[in-house]
Length: 158
Image (cartoon, rainbow, N blue to C red; front, side):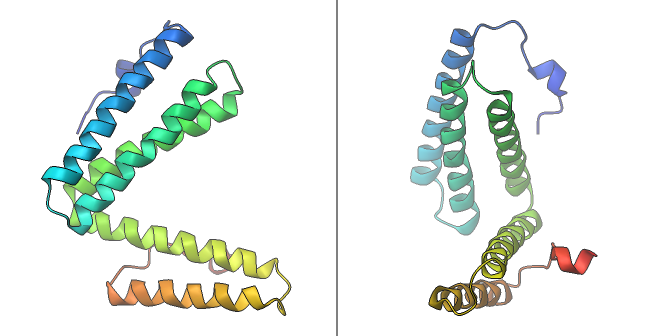
C-alpha cells in the first residue's frame, strides 16, 4: 500500500486542461487493468469485486473532468468516491476478512435504503411487498454467506 500522505501525492498548480488529460490517462490505465483482471485472474468472488470497484472509478473520473470549472460539491463527491474506491480495493486485495466485511456493509446499506423507502411509502401499495421480499432475500444472502453484522440501523443507535 502507498504510505505517502495526500500532500505528497497531490500536485498543485495544474491547469484544468492538464487535470482533464491526467484523468483521461488514469481512466485508460484503470480500464486496462480492470480488463486485464477480468481476462487473466481467476473468476472468483474477490477478483470480481475488484473488477467492479475498478470499473466504478470511470464514471466519477468522467464527471470530475466534465465539471472542472463547476461546483465544488461535485468535485468533492468525485474525489471522495475515488478515494474510497482506492482504499476499498487495496484493503480487499490484502484481506479476505475485509472482503466479507465490505460485502456485509453493502448488504446492510441496501437493506437500509429499502427500509427507508418502505417507511416513506403507502403501506397498502403493492410495491411495498416487493421491497419487503427483497429485504428478506438480502438478509438470507447474508446468512447463507456468513456475512458479519457491521452496521446498526439508525433506530438501534438511538
